[in-house]
Length: 236
Length: 227
Image 1: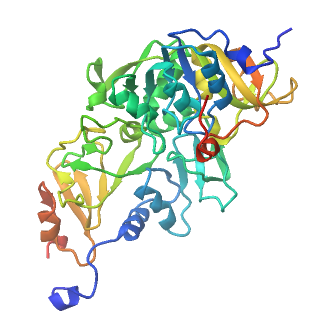
Image 2 (image 1 turned 135 degrees about the vertical axis):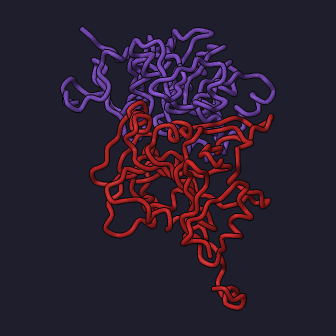
Image 3 (image 1 turned 60 degrees about the vertical axis):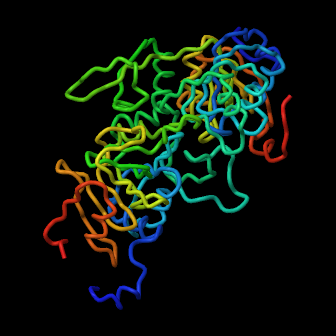
């Protein structure tokens, strides 16, 4: 019998190792799997390469993971945050590496990584500093930049509903990177607000098919990052 | 208009709302539009009645509606600026790769962005000053200018220091090369053409000479606009 549900957050993230690459879903706080990130902080794996659009807020979630010195490299499109200097302080002291990627190229690199496409060409960043050192090629008289697909050892994502096969639905714009990260990681770990029976998510409505999901842990009332930040909370 | 005493009665040029209003006039019925963060967001408030415009926000929503009523926002319904928004009836959600396929695949009709510099060949610089100690952050700007069919820029004509933003060639790092179609400033509407900057319209109380003086590149003007 297939049952991807695990009983605890600690169990869900137990085998993440030092120097692994971890994709973390979320765009700002929408879709950020805060409880899974905090479980990773408790677990303590270091030297991680983390792929996320941003670098977190305040001193919780992704910002806390970075502040806890578990991340050696960020791959992201927008590392500046109004309410957190965690990343920028480490970046300015050369204590963390940054690979800056245009947002759409980041998404497409993840999609390609999960689809068996090692590299592709895009017009994005052509003629800009972000294409320097990359292979360029002309198609139909226009210059394109070669970009590589991105894969990861783990993806941590947040869903609204999950059944035991790992079929997922999301909540509004919290979907963002989660479906493509689920495709690009060897092991995809999901925190879901609701665990449902097979068939409760109609086949026509499934957003992420279960084949892309390995583990599910239920977090019924997930914390909202902005509330934690407003309350001045820190983690651990 | 030529008499100095009459000019004193009005504040020359367009204010921020008037600039947004002017941009909105050029957004046709049925357009799929992406508005950049900040000043471009104002454009949505000025689209003429009777035009149905669908707003795309690149984090994953087509059919962005107005701001939520106080207390009715949703932490997981946000725009590209991470501000809480609403979704109109008929809206759709999708993941990031689909959202950027809309942008990069040429499906979005118009994008309105801010600018630090625009060159006479339509190069845009709007993401970095290139300062050594700055944290570089690009977001979706490079994808938007590379993929969206028409790029509108809404910006003050000059920087706060009075330096022209319309220049022969950009000194800041580029967002994209030869990507800008039309520029809406507080002084004028200007197209980027194969011959360079070309005046489309002057703001009230603004003269061609004044716009030329504040533009650091040749500005072509059709005979009808040469007073």
